[in-house]
Structure formats: structure tokens, C-alpha cells
Image (cartoon, rainbow, N blue to C red; front, side):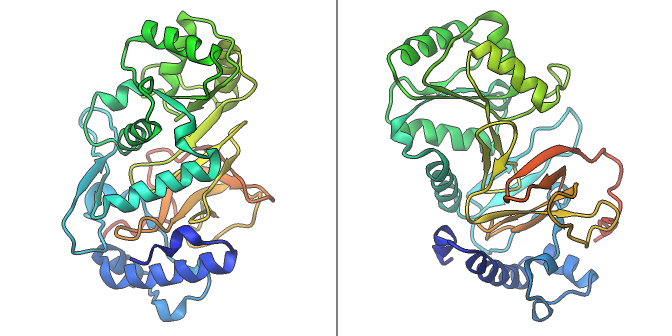
Length: 324
């Protein structure tokens, strides 16, 4: 694949590449082709981003979503409750994933070598196939810092290291799942000056769910920081969005959010109207780059976006095309 997706610098660039990717995936992804055929959509009819069909994310639970005949190098799986069906993302080019998250990190935070990365991701470490653990593990290696690492349940050691490094002026990213960060500040109080606290969401059934504003307030007080960062990614994607405060997310140049009408999945809404989140992830070239998620959100006038909830487990209205 032409790696020019990481050189996108304008709306026109993005649309041009997206239309090329759509054509490629229409021709090479059997499930996506069937979905487009059901909608009676063909690349020759498409000249706008909003006209491209977005594949419901549930298909990753029942189909092998690939646009390549190359050998599968990695299978990422979603976390799920016992007995539930999990999503599977078949990755034929793991280097493309690495290039995406490394470029994405650099775009928002600069050189990874400037940081010590401390990861508090117990529920992800306790299972195989997490794309988040794969990414964070590689970021930890790329820091070239012996202090970087994962912490499962050893909060005492993490606390000592965090306080010492922060006091010494070392730039730190503490990335953690929400419940684990809350566990840490219930045991210890911090007053951090050089540390970015980044939550990846999710109580994973360990605690009562909190709205993001409430969670961030508790974390800010516990860590003694002015703001909480967030990472937004998912098993089915190869790119991440980041927020540096208040749950206001930005995408890297090769990723874009559109909002669909909850009553009519084929209608794209204007900015500031809440609805279902559609994601264009051009790094997902060998899978599907056009995904209709189960998250609800809205796009702000400046192009940032917010997550405001999720669809429940009932069938999403307007997405009754799941019978492929």
C-alpha cells in the first residue's frame, strides 16, 4: 500500500485517499462488498466522503473482515464478558499498525523517547490479543528507558517510582484503565508536576460506571494534576484519537469522525448534532476503513469530537442490514 496516508495535510488529500481506499476495499473485501451491494452502492456513484457506506462494527464478531490475501500476522480480540461473542480484527500488516500509532503519538505528544511510560492495564494484561497492550508495550520499548513498564497489581512499586521520577523532573505518561487509576488514588495521594495521566476508559465491571466529567474530577484531585488526558481506540481500528482535557478528542490526519442519524444510519448529520459515531481509519487499509460504531457522540465546530454514550445492546435502528 502507498503509505501516503501518513502525509495527508488537507481535506482534499483525505477525501481523495479515502475514495481510493473505498474502491480498493469494495473490490477486495467480500463482506464489505456484500454490504455495499445490499445498499446498491458502487464506487462509480461515490464522490463524497459522506456517501461511503459504513460497515456496522458488529460484523467483526461474525465475519472475517479482510481486504487482503496476505497471511494474517496478528489477531486482535475485544474484551468481553464470559460467554459473550468478541470482535476479531485480522491484521495482515502489523507494520502498518505500528506506523499508525507511532505517528499518532508523535503528532500529539512528540518524541516517545522524551517520556517514561508507566502502564496500569491489569484487565488487558490478563488476556491475550489486546491491541492496546500491543501498542503500549511497543511504546514502552521505544522509550529506551529502563524505568518504563507495565504494572499489574504492584501499586506500591508503581507509586514509589512515579513519585521519584516526577520529583526528578522526568516527563512521564501514566496510562491506565479507569478502575485501576481509581484503585491507585484510593490507596495513595499524589501531587504530580511532570506526569500526564491518560485514561483509556472502562470500568470493565470492576466498579460503578462514572460519567467522564465525574471520573476526571476524582482523578485530578487524586493525582494533583490540572487535567486528565484520554485515549480513544478500539480493537477494530488501527488508529487512535487523543484528548488532552475534558474528553475533547482530536484525530490524527488519517482518521476522521462523522456522525450518523440514529434513526437513519445512512444520513450523516452536521456538526454539533448528536448521533452515532462513524469512523474513517485510513490505516485500516487491509481490513475496513469505514466503520459504524456503537458509540454516541458529536462533532464540535472546530472539528474536535466528544463521546456522549453508547447504544444499548438492542438492535441499532437503521442498521438492520446485519443479515448478510
